[in-house]
Every structure is written in structure tokens, then in C-alpha cells.
Image (tube, rainbow, N blue to C red; front, side, top):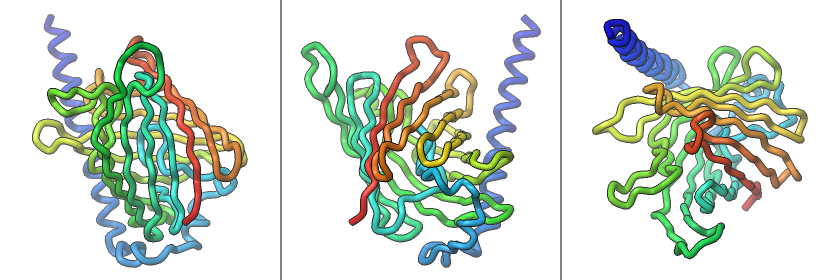
Length: 269
């Protein structure tokens, strides 16, 4: 019994300091890059962006599976995606590149659209999306983006107006190539409820083979161990405008695990 109490206390202490460490790292990097904020909002430093990564053949994703990267949809472009999830629903999402480093968009959850039975099609209120890349990346500092995503996943509880897997809310994400050419790492933190919940962390990886396939992996919702989520997937580029991805969410959790498919179309306006 004494050993169990010691282990529980150690786990609580470790999680407490991990949260603080993530917060310190993220906001230290923000302070380092603040002086470039104004320039980045209106112009792109293409030389830094090109030297940031040799991973140039495979398109860089603006999100891995659930977690955001520091990449943005290009100016005058848009990204339309359809996410098919385990409850027979679909989440259309449209993101626009309204300025060079700024994206805005919206998603809409439509439940019971696919499948058998007599369940009526159910919809949830549209969710807002915003992302701004405040630093395009350099030799030392990763690319940095801040944003807001109001789209949750899983079962929607009408009594609490909350999703089973909560939205990202306000987030900070950093992306750069580490260790292996072509292996991009994204990590950061988010907060979705300022009253009840604290800070959450996330980290993800993607590795591309030319411009044909992208392997995806992420560890999300890092806070208390039972709520952490491991996701794995892959994306195939059908054309330069269309890609199809499949993924397993919340793996190793038995019935809580979920299989999803995502179709994306990239265009210009």
C-alpha cells in the first residue's frame, strides 16, 4: 500500500513538472521570435524557409492527424478535407490562406451520415479555425505558429456541450526537421478550458517518401497518463491536389480505439 502511494505521488509530481517544462520551453521560444512577428505577418522569408528543411519533395502537412504543425495553407490557396470517423459521421473542414502566414477556416461535424440503423442525421454547431505562423524557421529555432481550433472529436454530449475528445482550443506549435533528413517533428502545447483543465502537450512526427506517401505518428493530450492518446497513420498523394489518409486514433485502448479516413483537396482562389 505504501509503495502504491509513493508511485502515485511520484506520478503526480512528474506530470506537474513536465507541464511546467513544456510551458517554459514554448514561451521562451515565443520571446526569442517576437522581434520577427511584424515582418512575418506581411512577408515570407523564403531563404529561411528553404534552408529550414531538405524535405522539399513531399508536401508538408498543416496538421499530422489531430495535432497542428507550424505549416500553413499558402496565400490565395485553400484546403478542403473530409474526415470520416468511427461513429459513421463526417467532418468537412475548409481552411483558407487569407494572408501569407495566416489561415482561417471552419469545420462542421455531421453524425450518423454513414452506416445502418434508423438513427437520424445529427449535426453540431460549426467550429472556428485560425492559425498564424509567427516565425518561418531558421538554423536553430523551429518554425512557430499559434492558433485556435474549436473542433472536438468522438461522441458529443448534449448535456455538457462537450466532445469526448476535446478540441485543441488555443495552441502553440513548433516544427522543424530533426536527426534524419525528411523526418519532421512538431511539438507544442494547448489549452481548451481555462476554468477546469490545465495545459496539455503534444508531439508528432511525419516522414515522407518523395511526393508519394507520408507516414504519420503522434502522441497527443499529454497530461495525465490515462488520457494520453497515441495515433498512427499514413497519407498517399493521389495527385498534387488530392491526398487520402488513414489512421488509427487512441491506439492500444481496446474499444476506445478508432479508425478514420481523411480525404483532402488543395486548390487556389
